[in-house]
Length: 434
Image 1 (cartoon, rainbow, N blue to C red):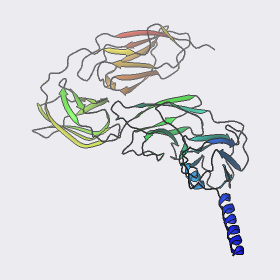
Image 2: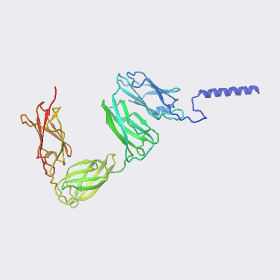
Image 3: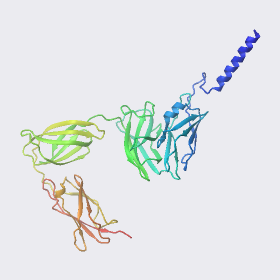
Image 4: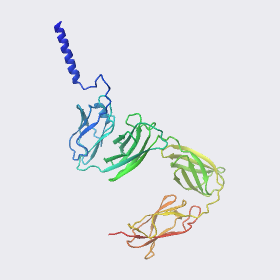
């Protein structure tokens, strides 16, 4: 009987020893809810001339290896790699050569958990380079809430993707609304998406969560954007009113700002003939349209594929209207000119941006640039930017230290023949120091 008890005791001791040797959550006591943290990276952040084949990350807790694999991102991507985990560290072993002269960004997001299912509270990133320099691309992201956004709770995330291949680059998060700064980004053009993560999956749900996104081209200086978090707008733009401002000028008003429209047709109710449309411009929620001279009063306006800035599209919208207005007889005016009279310019190829009070056809504009010393006219390139605005530039370089006179002639007229009330003349002096 004594031998049996002794054998049982030995078995119990062996069982206890082996149980203590396993790294697993305790079965009793209060639940551990402390989030793991990153203590150290090897190599250190912003390391240059990196030519090793492994990176080690040290945590405050033992990490679940599968969750770490889900949370790990490396840009540019490293496809062949092996992950090994120790007591409180994880090592990434590269099984392929890294690119030369390349900045890399390694990110561990909040999907990473310890053995007790506690997630990282914030995203951690490591930047390193295989050359002696680090990418200087920097981006500031300012987050604001749309004034119509409902009160929501969650974690704020900003994710960066390479715009060309849509591959994930890195991310940041914060428990409160704030501005984010990304430094040393290894991409020249990025797609940025910000969202309020309510379902705690570290990813955006565009159908239910507040978000905004934008594509940004980066340079070596700091770029900055503002993203407005809002629920996805699925409301289609609606034509609410059409107003005949004059015989040939119509204004269409919509329920929201318009990005584009595929086609506009104005049809005579009686003859079914179409009224010519010479030009239209979109400004906010309005479309201003210049038509031919109407030969009747009753028309049908037909719009196809009207799109707002959230790409909600109204396939077809129609409205009947009467146009009994007389032709516009008000004088044309000059709203603004980019240079002042007597101004010096530090270029031999100056640009003049001229804005009028009405829509003007390109053929109706009369602008001259004259050398004030010999009265020789300079040949101009005149481009229409948008309805009211024109960009004027000399076709050849001007002479240095020689004054020139820009003349916007009274012969300039709008579509309905109204001339500029008063001609405009300004002088400029190109002054380019050697």
